[in-house]
Length: 141
Image (cartoon, rainbow, N blue to C red; front, side, top):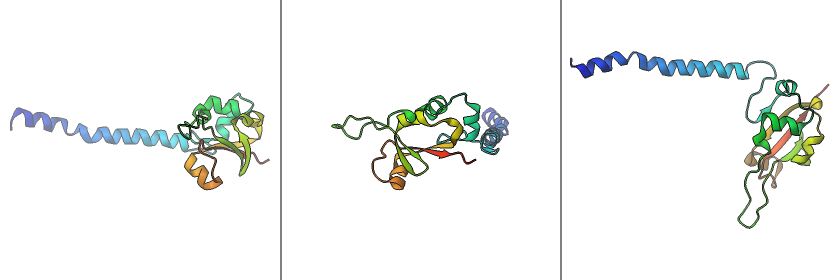
């Protein structure tokens, strides 16, 4: 056995452990993030736990604080049309208007907020949703 073979053999026992340790660490983080009633931390969902943890009073401020990328433009529809594509706001399945309407929704009355991407929004709600949809699910008392 030469020196190169000895070095390779000496390192091998560590190789399987590193991916296993990484997998276990990721599983532990994922379990904590999605474990618990009403827990979210999903990029497309703001759950009641995040709403309660925030000191904001309206949906616009809440989204600006915890998922600001939901409020950014999604590009332009064409080279001629330079209008920036922003999400449309829905209260459950009823269209409410553009993102400015979010300022009128008090966080106390919201169970959760969902971001629906353009493809899914167009399939679900029809054309005119190239910027996606922010869906408000009201709190049931």
